Amino acid sequence: MSLSQISSEKVSSHHRAAQGFSHSLSATAVLHRSHPKMKAENVSFYYGTFQALRDITLEFAANRITALIGPSGCGKSTFLRNLNRINETLRDTRLEGTITLDGENIQNTNVTEVRRRIGMVFQRPNPFPKSIFQNIIYGPKINGMLKGRNAADIVEQSLRRAALWDETKDKLHDSAYALSGGQQQRLCIARALAVNPEVMLLDEPCSALDPIATAKIEDLLVGLKEQCTIVIVTHNMQQAARVADTTGFFLLGKLIEHDRTDVIFKNPSKKETEDYIAGRFG
Amino acid sequence: MSRAMSARNMRRNAINNVMLSLTAVCAFVTVSTLFLILGHLVYNGGTSVDINLFTKLPLAPGEPGGGMANAVVGSAEIVFIASLIGLPVGFFAGIYLAEFSGKKFGILVRYAADLLNGVPSIVIGIVAWTLLVLPMHRFSALSGAVALSLMLIPITARGTEQFLLEVPRNMREGALALGANKWRATASVIVPAARKGIMTAMILGVARISGETAPLLFTALNNQFWSSGLNQPTASLPVMIFSRATGPYDDWHRQAWAAGLALLALVLVTNVTARLILSCSGSKGASLSG
Image 1 (tube, chains in turn green, cyan):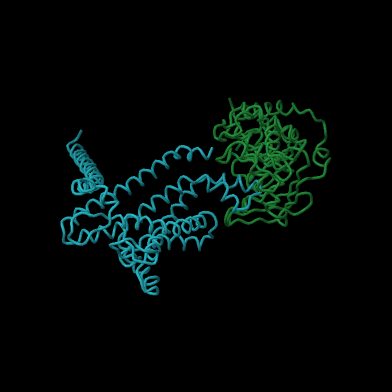
Image 2: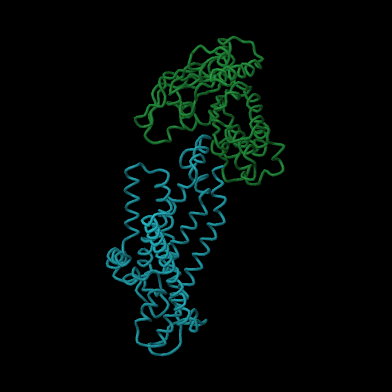
């Protein structure tokens, strides 16, 4: 089989995946129907002297799922990690440009407040070495959100939102490490949800999980967008096609294009996007 | 196979065997040292260990019998106070090194801790003598405790730092991403995750200082009786062993061996306990990352 045949097969399989989209909104409608919850304007980012992000401008529509795709090292995770200022914890880094949440520059907002409002789920599940209950209650506790509320209610509500309640309700006080990898990742999602974030950032949340656990998390995300704005970095293009309303394609630290997901997969306007989707590199 | 090649192979095999044997011999010397010491102590002191050693005061020189109960209690007192000072200071310095230090100051502190760790213990004793014994005009348990705490601080600090750094980075980020500030994340997630390792480092540090003699020679000195206060000269096991072993009486030598055995047993038990604590957490610690 020649290389071009392989590529065209991949293209058509992606087309089939993309045809599953039920929404018939136009790109601009999806992108701009609701006000942008978050905005990045002319964002550049440096690790020491290495420039990892180049002049990125991107809007995240409220109550939508935005997927960021691209080959390894393209800067998509770096970009995501700037949205809640977690990259600041790394030494010798520098950010240029502005990132706003509801129009307010997050660099001018108290960093713990930014991170309370913008939750994050990491590539590998990272439950704390505590019980399931204590994991969930950690965020509300440190953010002073327990006053006048019942901790048990918060735990139940958060676990239900992460579709983990039925599996854990009888062992809330067991160690979080007793859970499977997929359950641990949903626990991390529940833990993030417990502080009622307005935005959820997910950094390749399924890369360490099997397909069944992945499907559960994808279902969960689609349900969650009623309540918050979701940004997900993924290596898996089918995953982007399945869950995302809009998709941004990153390459070598640049945002090549951002559009409705079906447009990105079926009819991208940039040659690089098309090559990547077709599997010609990356 | 040519002759040249087979000759070369023989030479390579020979070198291989010689070097393997050399490493084995060195490994044997390392292990046998411990057992020689242990065996010698048991042989000389084993029969002399009796309850009197821990319950009776020393008798007048030359009079057979008696014990060193005052030294046992004095050692416990001095080590306890040294731990009260050394463990918290070392612990927080370790947290600073692992979690908060900027690059340059961190390197400085780390270097200083390592150097302090390598300072001969007799020098530590002289320092404590200058700082406390001279101004107070007397030898005291307190000055001995300060001398030992100076040794305990770098051990605890580096141990704490090491175990904190073993906590996976994504655990820190998990706490920070929930809105914790750095201290909160450290106190409520990172330190608990590393607590078994930190405890082990602390126990090993305390075991290490409880056998130190030189820092106590100029500070706590010694005492034939119960010490009447922390600001008075106080007997300790290591110094008592030193004075008994260098004395002229056979019964003193016998007591020195017995006390040496008791001290070594104490240190060994502490060490083994610490290792057990750590090995219990070993598998858990590894699974922290996922």
